[in-house]
Structure formats: structure tokens, C-alpha cells
Length: 131
Image: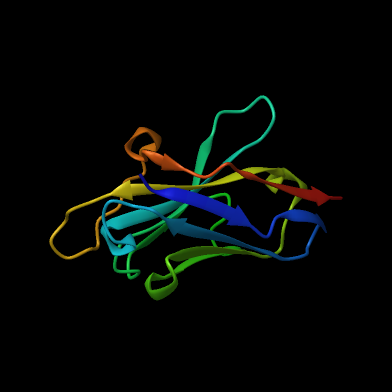
């Protein structure tokens, strides 16, 4: 069972930057077998996909709301996925969750944008952007 632990959240002013990290451990398969995603959930809203990175790190996806401002990356040697957030807006305020999706695609460039495909979740970390 993969365990995911997020870190790096906090309070930042609008226009500022923040970096999140998520360390994976305990998975049945190596970290390189998992596509990794960042989701977020604001009060009263559904949990939404923010960004995804495929196993090989070459293929990524960003929600329109964060495109050009957020960057996802992964270090497979450290079992870690990152989310660099810049030009933050008050509407980015949410609990951010790291999630893992076991994939067995041949080239490692597949990822899912479907929340239910992600079976492994971190506990979430608060990001608050003040105006």
C-alpha cells in the first residue's frame, strides 16, 4: 500500500509562490510505476484535478486555471513529486492532495485525469492565498 505525505503548504500573499512536495513510500510497486497527480479541494467545492505527471515525467497535464503558473515535476530517485506554484491567487486557496495511480503502460507516458482512478492519497495540506 503506497503512503503519500505532502509538505510545503502554508500562507502566502497573492502574487507569491509556494512549492509543495509529496514523498511516496511503501508501495507494492516502485514509484516509477505510478502516475502522480495533485488535486485540490476548496470549502464547498468538489475535489478537482490540478496537475498530473506520467511515470516517465515527460507527459504532464494542467487544469486551465493553473496553466502557466504551476509546474509539476517528479524525482523518481527520491520517490517525490513536486508542485511549484507561482503568481498565486486567492482562488488557489484549498487543501491540496497528492495522489498516485498505478499504471502499466508500456512507455510510461500515460496518465489519467479521472479522480476515481487514483487509489492512493495523501492526507492533504492547506494552501492559503491572502489578497
